[in-house]
Length: 316
Image (cartoon, rainbow, N blue to C red; front, top):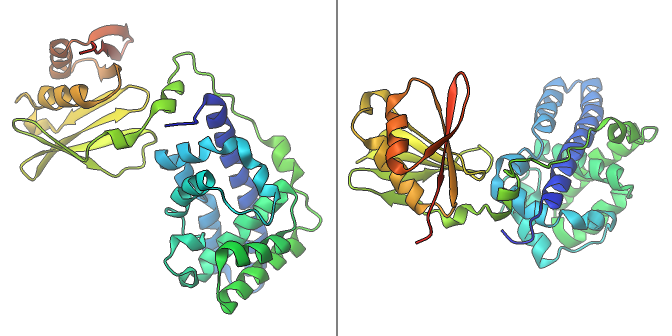
């Protein structure tokens, strides 16, 4: 994926963690307001939303990498009248697709629920605290540029935003930044650097072997491509490959011994664009051990419980 570096990935991770902390703090203020007004159930629902706010940024690899590609241009957050560039829009649209606290998640922004609006208010408020902008002026500008709410939804958003501004007027949130522990990614085994070239679009939705179908499935494991292994329409296991080169194949117990592990692994080894592959097994499992040897994997590491194998693919 273009325009990705370890510096940008590190910047994006730290922004995600810091922003989630800010949103959680804003959510606690708004939840306390709701409790005071005998809306405890809504308060619990809001706290639940804030706990998992923007989790897709970490769970969805494509979204994370696109956002990381623009992470060195966070200064636009300080411009309340900012209109997205084409590159910014591509990245942020991927985020909008997975999060109902953004108007763009819906075909009609006025389909947003009150809970969506409350989370949106906490999100916008958190960013205003982070970048020291005027929240109400930002909402007014973005209503014109981007939101396009009807009168009822816009009034609801402004109401919750105004509550947050009032509730937090004596809290500048600076302690959140002080207690945040920045992550400095610099892995010796260079697994993070491999993410610079991670692109799940290079993997087809389906592969076929003589007996098997490998069908791509959705999942939440970061930087991982997962395929269900099927005989006809019957699932018999899965095979997964991670952006750091690790590959895993799990054939269900009742199908072990029929050569399916070899067949699935051989196909994935041939199809992945990665040139170096790793496979880790627990000691005592003979079929993976024999299969890996047959495919050309060499053992490179051993512990009391596991063995790690590596394959360097030869150029055609």
